[in-house]
Image (tube, rainbow over all chains, first blue to last red; front, side, top):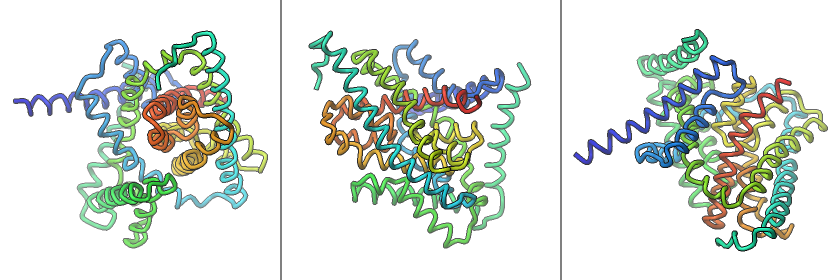
Length: 132
Length: 252
């Protein structure tokens, strides 16, 4: 009996993921929204979970499984990088430089900015960030 | 019900049908029953190599995709045939994006404690990361294709793929840029922050999530659970925020 219950919970979770995906796709198409349908589905699910106040156990299990397989799911798209042909060598140079230098710059800037923002607010509310 | 809504669902059904017909075809080297195990093997070995090596440079995205490429070259399968053989995986991309809502919900309490500075930092970081990269590429004379691929560099791959489709970019290029960016961030990020004298684990984690998405989050988890939680949270929020803002900016 417990097994049937677990399977049905898992199925409910899987159906929920699919339903929110399809709802998102339908809504973005209907209102010609510029955002991807699955992203809207994610935001709707987040909103629903916040209203519900908890995560149904089946949904938690299914999502954990699918997120653990993420690399497998987008493997076909990743393999495609070796088949990209229509870029010039100048394009590749710009791409690599932007990725390496750009990432380091934005990384440093984000961290410095956050540091400053957090310290600024921490002075006013000292003692609140005692977790470690 | 409006025609556009039905159209979106019909498109999805057509994709499902394509997967089913690919399975019904006679067995060949590009049959799903060959391609899917190849993908799974590539992923599995990629993961093994990564766990043994323990360096972000050999992230399963890198090892797995190289192994699959080797398999394709051995079997003599071209990319379009490989893509249609992998149809089932493309179908799972949507639900995988939706599933990102769960870790986001579970980490949401962390935000409440840190409050508005974090949200402001997120907004600035999410805008800054693609802007800096696009600026550098534009200076070096990169084409529009390159610039579009760079705009999604710091968001997690499933969201980047959905965005690339939305912006009519090359999905594979976007996936490659995301993986490479994540590796650069995860390899150099913590050391860079140490040089800058930043040791607050919340700041380190959040910067990792905003700039190096899932690969950075794995690295952040090695530093500490708190660092990992902030990274996972930043990754999710940054993905959602970029997905909302970017299409508006690009179409302008």
